[in-house]
Image 1 (cartoon, rainbow, N blue to C red):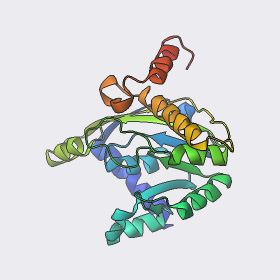
Image 2 (image 1 turned 30 degrees about the vertical axis):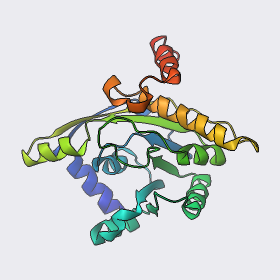
Image 3 (image 1 turned 90 degrees about the horizontal axis):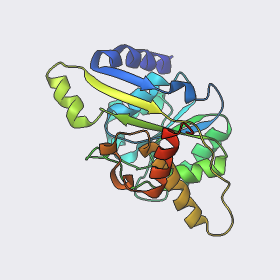
Image 4 (image 1 turned 180 degrees about the vertical axis):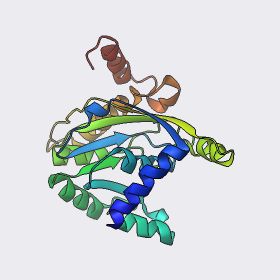
Amino acid sequence: MIYSLIRFLIRLLVPVVIRLEVIGMEHLPKNGAYIAAANHLGVLDPVLVYYLLDRRDIILIIAEKHSKYALLRWVVRKLDAIYIDRFNADMAVMRQVLKRLRKGGVLVIAPEGTRSRSGTLLEGRQGASFLAAKAGVPVVPVGGTGTEDRVFLANLKRLRRTSATVRVGVPFCLPALPKEDREAHLQADTIEIMCRIAALLPAEYRGVYAGHPRLQELLKQEEQGNL
């Protein structure tokens, strides 16, 4: 009941503060497990997850530093989100996420591991590629613009709505992890995820992946209608 109330409040309040354009929602699987891998710009991003996804089995990972706020701790508990230590390999969390994915849940994750203060893509970490390969579920790339904290807070002070865009890409699957050279494969898979996110973003948001050869391949495929 509390979960439904929080979702109701989010859906009530989001249109008041955000003018949201969503492109490609048809690419999201209607059911079953998958991983939505997105860039992370600001505090609004996790809120939009519950605004856009009509699922009860969302898996959201929250940085442990936020657990010091009592209200946020309560909300996180009611939404069944998971706290993680961003600075150490938290295998207990990984096992918990894998268990929920294998039960059909939807993981929403920012491979960068933190908000980008500059608004551009940071180097991706290997957690998302590891989970996708181990769980054997599709990855759905998502690129968002306009939710930067500095933009949102400035508009909020002026009682203006923030214009934001969410673009959803075509799902893809990663190969199973081999027994040898796992590190190299995880790095390659992480680059694949990040470049697919970058392909959904305007050029000025692509950050460290702006000149990557794989991104150029994906952009060319998109121009030719093959992506």
